[in-house]
Length: 590
Image (cartoon, rainbow, N blue to C red; front, side):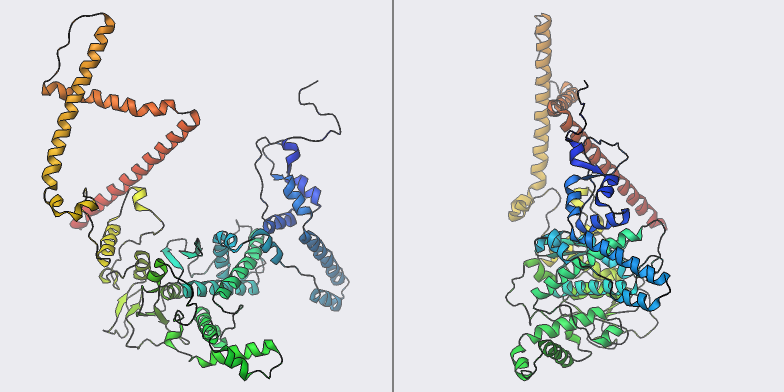
C-alpha cells in the first residue's frame, strides 16, 4: 500500500483540505466569474499561495475559510435577487411591453456597502491606513470622461469629483499636507492625519484617453467600494471639525467650477454658525420641521458672507477647534505662507496650487468669475505664471513659476525667487520622498536648501570633518588642522610598526613548525614596514570575512544580496557624478 494512499470517502487532510482552486470555488458558490470577482473585491478576499499546490501551479488557490465566508454573505443573495429581477426586465422588453419594463426599472432592488466598510475597518485608524489606493483611484476617475463603452456614467464621475474636493477642503482646512512632488505620472501628495501618513497620486489636468489593455470592469468594482469608504472618512473628518456632512455648496460657485473655494466658504460658514447657533434656533423656534430649520440656517449663514470675500478662503483657525492642540509641524505648515497673497494665471494647475497654498496658510485667487479678489489688487505679493506675459506688469508683486510654491513647501522655508523668475530655467525639482543620505548622493541644490534652512533657524552648519561639539569650543577649530595632521602621522607610524611585528611573529611561528632554530631578526627598517602593510590589510580582510564564514546559508545569501544592492547603489551614484562632471565641463565652453 502506498504511503499517501487515502481510501475512498476518507476526510481530506493538509493543503487539500485548507485550499481550493478558483473553479472549485465557483462551483461551490454557484456564481459566475464576474460575480465572484466582485464579491472578492468588496469583501477583501485575495488568492493564497500554498506551499504545496495540489492541483498544479497553473491554478489560483483560495482558502476554504474565505470561500465559506463568502457563502454566508448577505450581499450574495442580493446579487442573485438583482440578477433575477433583470431577467424580468429583459422578458418585459422582449414582449414589447415598454410600460412594464419602465416600471420595473424604477423598482429595481439596490444594495449598499456600508456594512462591509464597518466590517473591514473596525476603527477609524484602520480606514486611514488603507486610504492610499482609494484616494489615487477616486482622483483618477474624477478626471476621466464619461464613456458608455466602459460603462462609466456621468453621475459617477461627478461623485468622484465631489469626494475629492471634499477631501482636499479638509486637508487645506486642517493644514495636514506635508509633501508635494510633481512628476511625469502626476502630482504626489502626502498628508498626516491622526498620526497616519497618507500618500496619493493625482493625474495632470489633461485629456485622458481610455486604453484597451485595462479591465475597467474590475476597476469600477474597486471604485464602487472606494467611493463608499471615502464618503465614510469624509463624514468622520467633517464631524471632527463640527461641520455638517454632506456640505451644501453655493450654486453660483459650483457652476463656475470653484468647488474647492465653495467648500472652504461652507466650512467657514458652518464654523461661524456654531457660535451663533442658539440665536438662530430662537429666531426659528416656530418651525416644526428640524430639517427645514437647519437648511434655512445654513442658507442664512452663507448669505452673510460676501461673494468675493478675500479672507473667507482658509481663515478658519481662529473660529473653530480652539481646544485642539497642534503639533510643531502643523504650526510651521500653517504659517509658511502667512500674510502672502497669490494670484494664479490661467495656464498653471489651479486646483493643485489652490490646495497647496491654502494648506500652508496663504490666500489665493485666479482669473475668472467667483475669484476672491481681482488681478489688480495691490496687496498681491506673488503672481504665479508659467510663461512670459505681454500684459500689464505690477511692480508691487513678484512673478514666479509654479515650482517655487512646491519647493518652498518641501523645504518649509520661503526660498529666494531669483532662480524661479519667469523665463529662467528653474533649479531641479527634488523629491521629498527620497532620503539623499541613505541613497549616498546629495544634489547640489539640496545642499543649498540645507544651508538656507540653517540660516532661517539661525544655526551654523559644521564644516566637513568637524562635529557639532567642535563648534562649542573655538580652540578646537583653531588647532583642528595641526592636530589632525599630527594624529594622522602618528597613526600611520603605529600601523607600520604593528604590521612589522605581526610579520615577524608569523615567520617565527612558521620556522618553529618546520623545526628550524634560526632566530629571525626583528624588522625595524621603514622600507620593510611599508612592504608589510599589504599583509596587514590581508589579515584585516580575513578577520572581516570570518563572521561571514560562521553565518548560516540563509543569512549568508541575505548578506550577499545586501552587498549587491549597496554596490548597485554606489555604481548608480558614480554614473550620476560622471554625468554631472561632463555637464559641468560642457557648460563653460558653450
